[in-house]
Image (cartoon, rainbow, N blue to C red; front, side):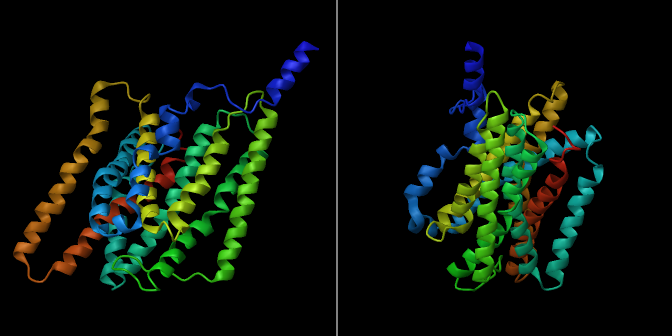
Length: 344
């Protein structure tokens, strides 16, 4: 009788007994929450008026301190996976040059804004897939059926149209239908947005069903999947759909994504480095990212402006092509880097 009672208690235990879910632990604070305690309060305090005054400066420092390191972190993992033979070498320099050529092709065809807009839309999808990936990495702590796994997949992916197209639609309304110098938003029909919203809601319900299935079938349930599902919808609503928090949402989602990515790469790579020389080499891209970035930005930019006439527009677009290509290549690499075939 006593044994039966104990089993029933374990069956319906809701809180996990795992150390890594310590609310102050590295996995929770930096991978799942993206270190938001370090910057979200400041973003909320500064508010829309304060952040709107110096958008160029804010974007510059975010790119310098967060985006550049997280993009460089991709190459730490890519280098190891190519060396292990799990990712083809073509995704290194060949893919980098190919994506660069595609962006230059858009520019040469007079479709510069279209090319950058497509890259930005891909960025939104990349953000969403990243959180799904984090969810899958930590959800493995629970035993799950094939049905629960499929429900979990659709929970995240049914919401993709809402967030990707909703972000563009939100910018269209804020900018009164006018494109910026780097992005052309679209006015998504209301009926389509309603349909996307219903799909997202259905996805959220499927996610809850998946988590309920895990809780029911595991003697000790790990609620990390429930935490990530809630964060997925809350973070991207704030960052992609909120008109009232438009500027704050954009800054928040950019920093959140970058810190989460760097933290996740470190988490996965720290146990895979055994040789001191290899460890130093794999840290190289991170340490060299800033000097290379500044050398290109200041050195090449200075030479071009000194030797050419009326190249302001060209230099601005060239800089955006170079910087966006790092991001686009980062997205391309991640499509293969986080697959089952590539492994941990």
